[in-house]
Image 1 (tube, helix red, strand yellow):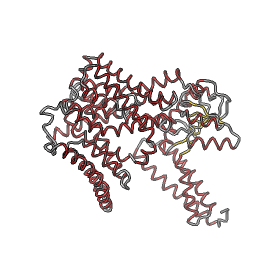
Image 2 (cartoon, rainbow, N blue to C red; image 1 turned 120 degrees about the vertical axis):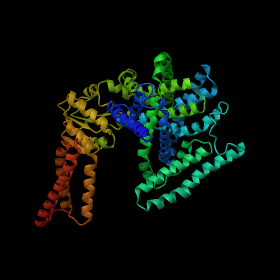
Image 3 (cartoon, rainbow, N blue to C red; image 1 turned 60 degrees about the vertical axis):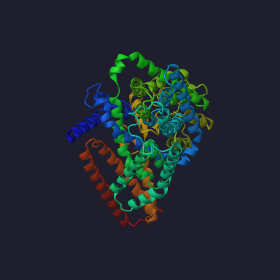
Image 4 (tube, rainbow, N blue to C red; image 1 turned 45 degrees about the vertical axis):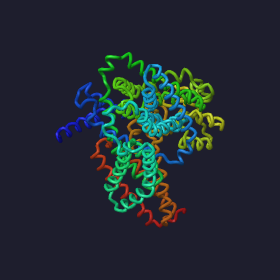
Length: 613
């Protein structure tokens, strides 16, 4: 048994280590990498793992429980209250609208009402993992489309809990003897007493989290043993999940409630940090199991049926999403990004469909079809976004203002272009303008563009990584481009585009950290400005002054530190891909900088520092 376990673990982990990096390299989500890995080694392809991956699904489903615990931890009541309108409004319209339409279509297709409703609830979900990663990579998390997408995803994550509680009620008349082979500990009780036990269990989770778990975690934290705290974190999740299972409720429901209770505790971030690796690994195994269950024989036998199901589900979801965006007055460009970004069926659909299949609500043949369609819809997400970005958005545009101006001539050509007008870019632009230097500014948030144009800035809507838009904005006549986009990935694409199409432009680039700066050095950027460097050095200057150093001495040492650090950055960039050489070089550079600064300080102090203070 041990040999079998080790060989199977080797297959799972080895395939994931190959497929997931390839998927990320191609611009896909890691979820798709895991699904592809499972499909590759599953019974319908290479056959390296057991039938439909059932040998790992029981363990891996615990990853879903951990995911819901973490969602509960992240759900601060204050944040939910601030976003209540968009969460309940946009999320409610999308979820309920999609569910009703799909349920109606299922009933028209002569499926039973419980089966149609269960399928509609599952397929209404979108992929949290894919959408959030896409928003981050494109740098549009803070645009109206990004905020609307986040609100809908948050509503869906919360909606999973009542849906998991509802599915057993739909299965009451469908359960066979096999399905009830493992009844709950309270199955023999009268219905009214069952209800009281369930209410008491939920109240117990709340009271225990507040008055028992938090003090216990404080006691464990005092031991300063991190492994003990990790053990306590896992014990908490497992105990709550097992307790919910004993009374016939979903273990995910208990985990979610426990997370919500602990969301405002001082241990929130520590719990997130400790559980996240386990959740990520188990979820990866879960998606490998899902991929292994995709029946390629079925797809090959009925490609028209699978294709029709995929097209129909996508059309329904896209239609409801676009309508919800119209109701909440998202501009056309933002509404299209929001619609196509959320158009896929998400990972929670796998959970809900598996649960519905175990409860015998959904027939096995239809379950296989729907699992295949779910996986294919997730794989189609990058293609949908590409179609929107390249074909639909340029044709339709925004009928109000900003999108029209993307394709029209931009008035006034200036020597400076600024890409990105968030907190960083706006500070640069205001400083330049205050010194008589005007700039053309490009930003991907149409609402922000409208506001800033009313304030008198030359701001234009558009994706600055596009060469045609840069050309329209005057890149051929400009002398300088300031790359100030929030997303490091989008900034990197912008620099590549400029280097390829406008090599004469001098690029001044914003970097989030040292590693982003390394990438920019490799792309030939000479002027790099790390967000954390200057602010942290200024804080250190103030610390020295507080400790009694003269202001001139502290400022002079800061300038030297920055110069030495910039020189070290260039040297280390050449070695960063060799971990051993890089680590050795970093130690040497730190020691060298410290010796140089101490020597400079000693020499300077011996000259009797009487400079300004």
